[in-house]
Length: 265
Figure 1 (tube, rainbow, N blue to C red):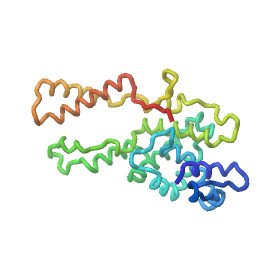
Figure 2: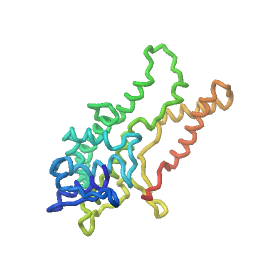
Figure 3: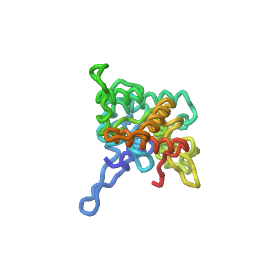
Figure 4: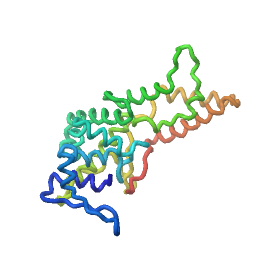
């Protein structure tokens, strides 16, 4: 589903008459009656599309790893609760009303949990833990934990943590405000700062999260492990050395909270 059509269907709420759309090129070019699409999908679903597209990944916001658009959209179609929440993306009061922001964020967390196949959960951190335990929990508490089983674990397969998802929501809300009011001379009075981006050296970068990257006790434990393995390295410990070295790189990034990508798009 083309992102331009998603935004156009959402814009039908403020555009009278027929809204055409063009698909393809050359002899394959076809016109799409977007007003009919709007009527078939319904106002609730269509008005949620700009927020949905901005949240699940667009030119200005990263996508959820390997989740795409189809599965999230199928879930959205069946759940009016999510549609109602995403309809508010771009509303001025969602920038200023902290209570409404918290209520919307709670519903968005539930939506993201369902996308990651953890339904009826309002906390993405709990969903992350559940997905990890589903794959790596031991059947017997006396069973030794085999750290080598974690070699193939891809943390990007987990949903984002709560602090990171909140920044994703802030960016999606800001992007939606521009799309929703693109017909006006000044689409938004708000700025990217404090809405998921940071300005450094005249360039905007993603602000991924607030706070520490890892809990302090975990950081201290891994630092101690780094000192231990550096004094006694064996073949069996090579994997541990790699993981601790990776943490050392993370820690250097965390000290400056410099975990961002360019937002050049």
